[in-house]
Image (tube, rainbow over all chains, first blue to last red):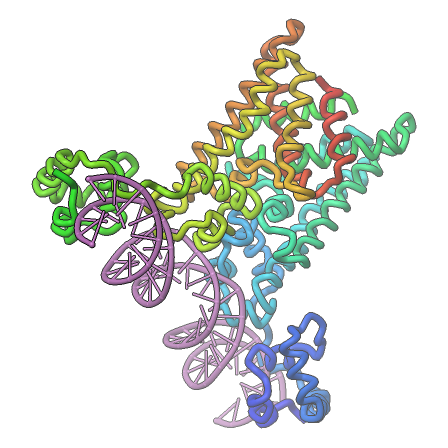
Length: 247
Length: 247
DNA sequence: TTATTATCTAAGCAATTGCTTAGTTTTGTT
DNA sequence: AACAAAACTAAGCAATTGCTTAGATAATAA
């Protein structure tokens, strides 16, 4: 039996639009807002009965999703990268992603959700140069190449956008968005671990030196993220050169 | 003849409140908004006659200013430093500075004016450690001490606020506030020049090396501004130590 | 052709923002 | 005590913000 308009009409008085959409898309309540969860438990009996009815609905959807989520997230990531998190409004996202606000909220729940998906996409892209470093097995020279690759990666035409993660860490306050902060710190630690791994390829370095040098390299990378917006290409290359003189 | 309510009443229909306040405080039209200037020129005849009357007003003000501008700017600077420029609303400034919004606009013209005054004050404070570096005549070791002094300077209790200038550079987009960007770049160049000056105390360095090392040090300082918010004290000290191994 | 869902459109909401207004209160001078 | 200006208070404005609603339209399967 198909999930039909009759059931939807009956459920409407109990759930708002985005909840209904969520219900249709998935029964996964993970990350639902407390308000939504509270409402769900409050109407648990009715909810259960409708879920039963929903589970009976086996027919494929009449209309397939038209926009590709990865494509629109890529566009959103670009905007966040150029503008920063706070200065990017949902209306700007709507224009850049090419889908309307309702679809944004239906697919990603809220602005933060769009941003977190953008960070995930950013990770897949920067993984290209991280994998290059991982596979190079080239110790410090590999890390130096990573720095150059990173500068190339952060360019958009003549515009240098720095690192999306570093930009955002410096922009939002820790207490204002813990989820985002946690993700960003995780990301930074992954890069640091990679540096440690490559530094360990030099048997002459003991662990204390390696930890210090890893922090030193992270600091330089943080600096480059900002410097890339202010210094010219020659200066940036010189900075990398001097950075690696004694490693 | 005193500047009295009669003149003020007559001028009121031609000027808004903040212009009237400005008129009373000063005849300096520098940095007046184009709208204000246009209005001034538009009513130049009337304006000139009132200026004449104003110039005749020799009596001292009945009531002295009660709040100290430097004190309130110091408080504003602290807020901008902790929160960032955009995340600091005028209502928050009002609370922190302890004066009402009208007085803020009367004294500083707009939010940007408050921020620019805050940057000026920030400069007077960081000049303490810049002067220490300038007078130390201690080459690279003096610069290293400056790094440590900077970390101490950026602390507020256990909170590390980074560099007010670096924070803001990373937060606002270049095209969104040119006046602020210009001030911030000027500030950075002053510090770089100081580094160059100290590096030159080592006769063995030629100019090319010095320019490279100055950029390298600026990059490290930019990095520290962010790192100071994330890394612990030992890590920061290690970063500085490793940074100066290359010089 | 009909049913169903995806996606859109237009409008709206409450809160926040930078800034202004008009009148009131406070304070210091005469 | 009166006068004059500083500073305050309360309210307001237009624009922007994140997010929601209700109905309409488009696209696909049956």
